[in-house]
Length: 452
Image (spheres, rainbow, N blue to C red):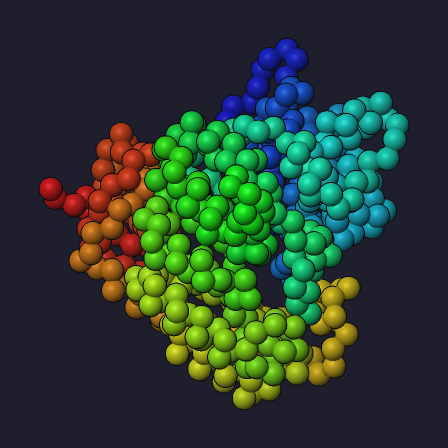
């Protein structure tokens, strides 16, 4: 999409939103822009002349808070020398976890708001403008937030995220999500349908349903029965204009038979599944409070592959969890060898203050974690390359998202979510095009438009 220009209307202000982290934050940033649009704020692509800067933060990765403070330091210098009237807000999970500390350490910040309170942005801006009231909002009220959001969306491209579930009740010992996003809450079906229809009316052709535990979705359906994620997917698939669907992130404990059947029978649902296991050792899984064993995960994958043989499987892995032995790590390596992954995300364990894992004994030395991660990633990257190379010679339907770096080259996503490059006219942007794959790397595919 072309960069958005700085608005020049007499009564229009501008907002720059910087997004850190997961798909949930990408969605939240888009919705913040939607909330601000009716009060005259237009989104811009740089903070240089913005009236409002929002940092939408993530607390999952290591040193997340320190990265935010570093960015706030740069913003303060810019504000002081170039834009003294700029207002600054910190949103998201770091705001939820460290709201009072942010206000103490970074006086440049005017507003701090957690993930469930960004619908209150107009009210908070009014308080800052009047220089009255509390500008620290970190309540947990997901239902109120979604009730207050505009039903319509300002779509930015041909694929879009759509939040259907938030929060987590699992309390894995390494994870801050239950403390920053709150308990599991599912959105009503009619809200989701209205938002999906709004996206389709603006030309969106692919939607990805997202949630911290998206397959834990449950809500009352229009037929009066309790709907799970499978019911919701089949219902949304009936919306005209929506040609492709995905969902992420799933938890093994919530992957039920109906959702597996939907993977097998709904043609609009793409053959890609992100299903984290985190570790292959039952001892480590128990210490993580994952609530499943490796055998359960392995059997679940077998059922999924029996239902959808062409599924591309993605996973998450943590190495060096407290107490992880050499044998525990070898169990994880054996898990990867046995399951096989088309893509993956892997990390060294890092302490998150306030989580049970932070106080566990037998923390693994940093050099051991680094060596284990290197070995794991070498195996995972080899599998990813092998998966991509297995697609050479096949013709895949690619949703064209825009131009690529090369002259006359387009970029899109295959059904397996893999980035795909091929030559073609810009008129194909927004279309689903059959592309024959001619070569493959670790992270992308190259092809040519299939001959008819």
